[in-house]
Image (cartoon, rainbow, N blue to C red; front, side, top):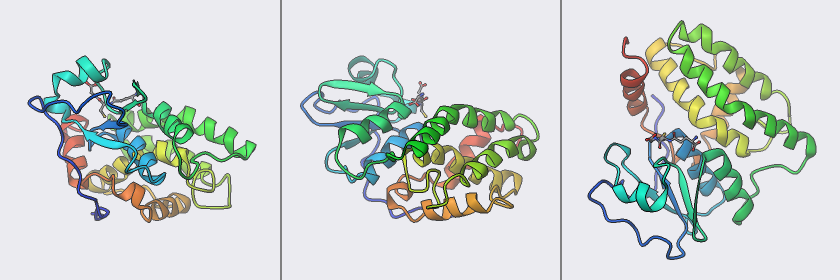
Length: 237
Ligand SMILES: N[C@@H](CCC(=O)N[C@@H](CS)C(=O)NCC(=O)O)C(=O)O
């Protein structure tokens, strides 16, 4: 299995017996779970923009959630959420755009109109894309997931000025990678199928993403992903 990126020392997840941080004291906090693909998106955006000192990570143990999280932080009781300027915002796709628009650092969305338009199109498709992948697990997974990976391979061919979905690394790669990463691992380990086979652009996309610390620092232990998928989505395996 692929090795994990070098991780900075990460804080331990807060549980039902943990006190809350000093909420609404002006600190910006990103509430995540280390294994959540939605939270991973915002975590990658925060890292890539170099906001490690501006946005504190607050990991939550979702299996043993502190009651104050729902009561005082985010009534939806999900991760990710972002505490910023006296408010708490949620929804990962909104949050990656919010972090890009409201914090310093390298812009994560191109200004070129053609790229912007294609980027919005890809972002509006990502929920369908990930749902199709999860649904494929109920049938002949390799065959049923193939159109989703072909979609990505074709999208990667749209701009040839870089290996990412809009040429340069952007919010769009961030929206897709947590899900593609998980299915790449599960397909390799469970179905002995390499999703990059016959998909050279997808292979290069992974290679290039794996050179970015902002992303590799957020990767989950592959074995944890396989175990979770087997338990939750593949009980027959
Ligand atoms: N649409 C949300 C989904 C967030 C989500 O479902 N997070 C999961 C963890 S991966 C969660 O917090 N689940 C807790 C629950 O549903 O009780 C987003 O994009 O942020």
